[in-house]
Amino acid sequence: MFAMPMQPGFDLDSLLRFTPPHYVCERCFALLTDVPANGGYRCPVCDLAYVPTEEYPSACAYLAASGLALGYDDLMAHAQRMANIARRARGGLAGQTPDTTPMSALLEAMGSARHCIHFTTFGISAWFVGALKMAAQRIDVRGVISGIKRDEVYRELTTYANDAPRLQTRLFGQDSQWYPHQKIVVIDGLIAFKGSANLTDIGWRKAAHGREVVEVITDVAEVVELNNRFFSPVWVGFDQRAQHEAHSTASSNGR
Ligand SMILES: [Zn+2]
Image (cartoon, rainbow, N blue to C red; front, side, top):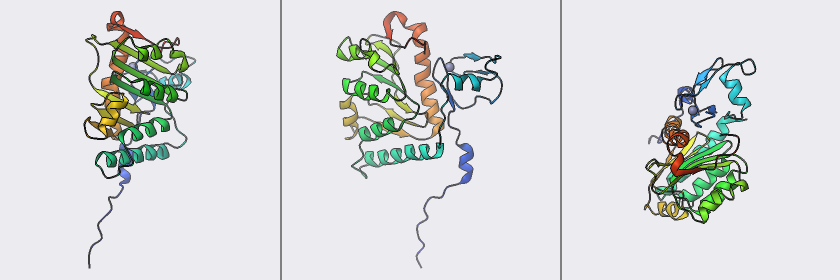
């Protein structure tokens, strides 16, 4: 008798550790996992206080009314879809599923997003600006872009920002001392791509050949940590620290 190899099981207990973010902060767009059902709240990243009022008796009520809730008809189905993309992406990176490239996995994840995409990058290609503008027709896309030059990509992000008002960016020049080095793309607060590849088509195609590092993250706690550590503080610090050396394309609603 030969024992059949055991498939890895699923422990129901792990569901208790599945605490996806339910809201994003109005000011810094931190992913928030611990907003209480009742009462006020203070953002752990930017310290913004959500004080209960007569109109909004809880932080939850205010955030939901402001369109900052990350709600789903079927969270498990959405999470499974993202996990599936991540698995194929890892298989592609390992050479096991050559049909899935880092680029195709990123595009599929972006196309599957229901709420938001947050990213940081040093430089961005016109190709990616187009893809993000397309995504921003449906969902909120927010990005910190460093190393920006006054070229056609800059014009796409400023002069022609109205093509996609839901694409909001914080732009840092090449000489900025504030730009973040970590490159991340966080989708719906559930999945993230991190590594050395900037949002350029060349970078992501190099990643398929191991010349740029791209790692897919599906540990939700790590996804939240990446967003709240590398994206939100730079986003909220932009106005305070770097106004003199950078340019914002935030929309007129103040977000
Ligand atoms: Zn905040």
